[in-house]
Length: 417
Image (cartoon, rainbow, N blue to C red; front, side):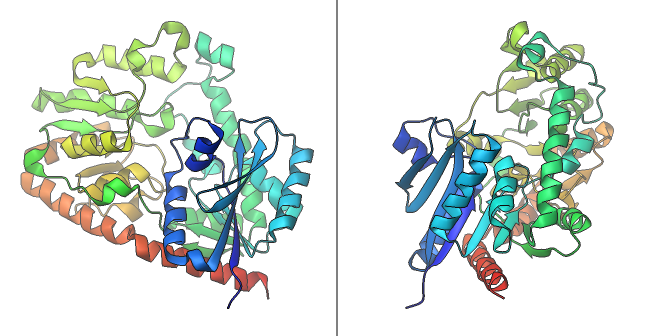
């Protein structure tokens, strides 16, 4: 019988089953890793051992068996020297055949490569903060802008952007040292090769949350003239552009309504609001949009699906994206999508076939695209069908599982040469 492949993941979050075991709140991000784990365990459980390294809010190093994997936890406050030694000890204990680093900009990823090398490592690109830093302000002049909350938390827009720059240096250093990269778009390929011309690049898509595979958008069941978008806390996601386009849409469709999951920033007291939120509130007031914008608060997976399905259109107005999970979720449901033509979006959206694209700066074009979907049911249905078809192929879970397993076998073979 062949020896099991020992796989070690480096994650930036603690997994839900570990949180439950330790009585900690569940982290709501990183769903693609949980989906990867489920797919691999369903298809290759007999062929693999999965080990996961994660930071957590505890005060001591911990080992936890949960969900068919062994989890090694380190306190978030661990110093670099101590963490480097601990990572080396875990690596020596596991003796992994393949190390999969999820995310490129985290300090513990760089420390692991420093301590253990990168011959058997593959790095998954989510976004690239070293590039995102260029577009952080989303076209706004937020230099020197801050609120009391920002000062107290040392979280002004300028500090936020500098943090992207700082983490971007770690990211570029890591990419330059890791020989294997897993990505999803021509955009992350181009930037990875620009940093490390010798990198071996593998394409591997990400699975989506389970519920998105079992629901479908219907034109006759959506709420006409409604827009759904993912409300961001930062300017890079472009909410201000969508709000600038909304008055233009409302001239033709007075009943237009925008729904945004996340905090109701209009209800936040002034001492708890960040500079970008203050700008958003002022934009809403300036254009008299209070009655046509609804902040939904935190949403479960089921609630998010319901809001996607009820929308007439989904809009992603980001100043930069690699491969937006929100766009992918909208597409697999069949919601007509409009997205800014940035980053890797051209690999997700074929303009006029599986969605509509526009230049990020052109709010007039964004408004026009929204109105065109509202006005033309034939267009909406064509985009819906095209999006669902392409996303169903892109996010086919069986194909993704086999692709990831083949990548692991290739990386394992390369490291043994």
